[in-house]
Length: 68
Image (cartoon, rainbow, N blue to C red):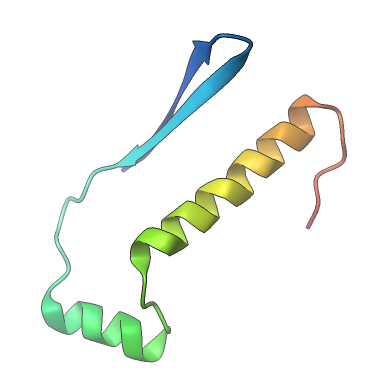
């Protein structure tokens, strides 16, 4: 389960994204993800995904057309 909280802060908004692990992935599962899907740095992937999401939110809020 994932969630995003929008918290007013000064003249901007703090976005806090979180997720709950409901069933941990085994060491073998991580091996498969890393080998088949090239997933090596989960933290970096999560940050990149969050940055893309925030860019899309900003485009919508600022009235720009979303990029692909």
